[in-house]
Image (cartoon, rainbow over all chains, first blue to last red):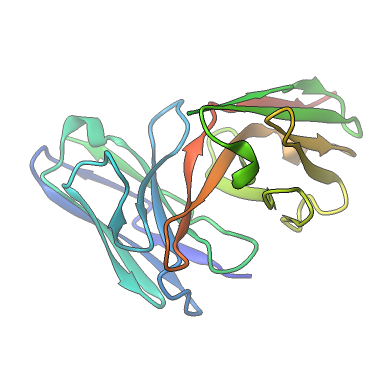
Length: 107
Length: 121
């Protein structure tokens, strides 16, 4: 099974700041990595697929990068509505594991 | 485009429950579908996937042999039959659509609102 290690587990930043969340795996998953945003009490929302492709309708301040074993989600110019928990997920092989999540708070 | 889960509730340990995921707004029979769960206050955990016609299914080890995913493309509905339920199965269960975007890139692009399953005596 592929273990997803996400860091940090939580972070706090100000409106307008840039934050980066990292997801690592021990074996290569090529570009089979997605990022999801989950607001409190809501279903997850797809942000990024294929490691770096922005899902339709997602603001351009979100971006993804990486391949192989290390991936990043960057939010440029934080907005209050970005307060949420963010998850990575690999779709390389079953079980299609998620990272443990990064809780982002806006100061 | 909408996914609506139903069938959650309170069940005793060892009991059974069947969840449904009703679909509208897209051609259900063309898509692979997943179940993902989230225990209270915890992260997302992938549970199961079915291919477009239900002939190929896979499961997380934690539910293998106890849960069965299925679908009825004539009713635009996916199911999760859950047997021998345990306290650790307590979670919100989400159904999600898998979309393939080309180049082997796929992701869960549409999610339902979730249905809560509580296993307790």
